[in-house]
Amino acid sequence: MALPHLHIFHPSLRLAPHLPVWLGSVEALLRNEVTWDGCDFHRLEFNDQAGFDVPTAVEMVTKYPGPVIVIQKVQMPLLSRFQQKVSRKVSVYAILASSEEDIWKACEAAFKGFNDGEPRISARELIAYLILRKLERRGHWGGESLNKNYLGIDDLPNGGFPKECANSKEILEVADVLCNAGLIRRKLGDGIQKYALAEKALVQPILDSKTFESCGSWPKLQKYFARGTSLVPAALLGYNETS
Image 1 (cartoon, rainbow, N blue to C red):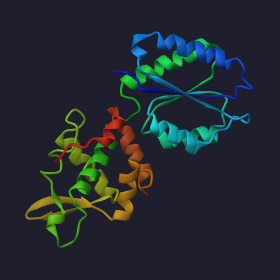
Image 2 (image 1 turned 45 degrees about the vertical axis):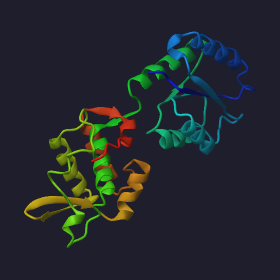
Image 3 (image 1 turned 90 degrees about the vertical axis):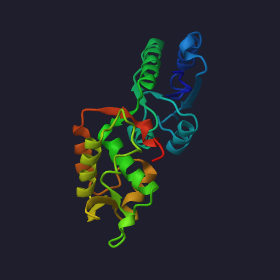
């Protein structure tokens, strides 16, 4: 798969005057390789205090999605903020470069990671998010006396999940965890178990951000997700199979 964009964040050229030569040499080398055909290279230069504007960097990576190579030194709090905001979209590789070869190796690692489906998340986390997304798409926001606002247990795993990442047993197991976390509700109706979303104030931030970090049960959920042995591409959070 062709890599559409590659970002290189680097120190101020005033403080690192050797970098234009190194970066130019690496880009020229990569452009001569067939596998890099069509890749656009983007650069962001740090200021003299090793800082950068995080919103600008996030906007650039969002507009031109692709892995980011960060040539240190850089202010770590800024880098951490940036990584947190883009972690579901692209992989970030922070390196110390003592030669152009170090930069070239990082570019090759970024290319390989992209083709391997990075960034990756726990399959359990993907399933959890897609459960919420499915219930939201179908309008199942609960209601004590409205069984139609609940989805039957047999219908929950039926559609809306990548078949290679989840089976019915795993989906229902994750649904139980979400119930315990207070993110979905469970009730008996028409003789079967049914599910619906909890309060919108709790669920909507998760749906919007594609992360569970806003949830009060995040520490427990994070441990549960981390215990899963399967990792999947974070891009699957956008899985939108009609169901």
